[in-house]
Length: 213
Image 1 (cartoon, rainbow, N blue to C red):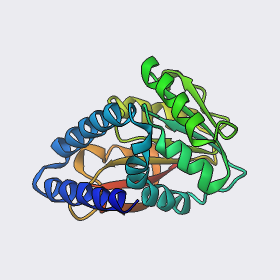
Image 2: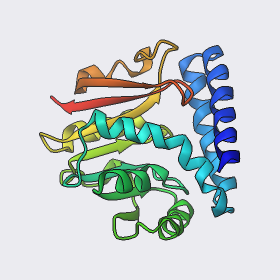
Image 3: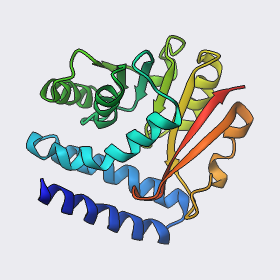
Image 4: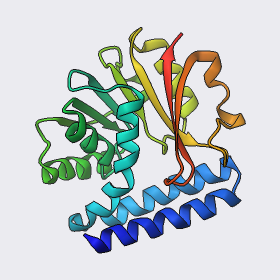
């Protein structure tokens, strides 16, 4: 476990240093590609999952506090990937039921195995689905991963279809100061912007709380 902690700190340090030197658009592409590569490698070695889960642990904890998530909330996680660390950690930390979707059949198959290996099959359901057409009106909390390509179209769908009291957590790249970048200012037109948590240890990612207008 000590090796896991050292490796995790090294990855965080490198991402943070690289992130400061890149503009937000390039940073997002860099981060998204990095997560995809890491997932594809680690999914073959389940004993290394703790390395990946450690990267998301603090972020997920911050987001639970950000959106006041409780065991009574129905959570939708969009973009589970091959290793649905966010979904698993949300279920373990909050006790809530989590539905996790991805549009890649292979990633869904691998994510199902990961959930079974993590012992939370009673709390986390993995589905193959296209997020832009997925019914979201039964969920209290919707988490949008940072690797979603057409995220503007998705967020527009969510703003129209979500419940009136639902909370959306949107992960995206920020400026070095942790602020919303120019490319994401459209959010103010379709949502009420809530609090923002700067995940500075995670390559300048931020989690933005979005509420229905």
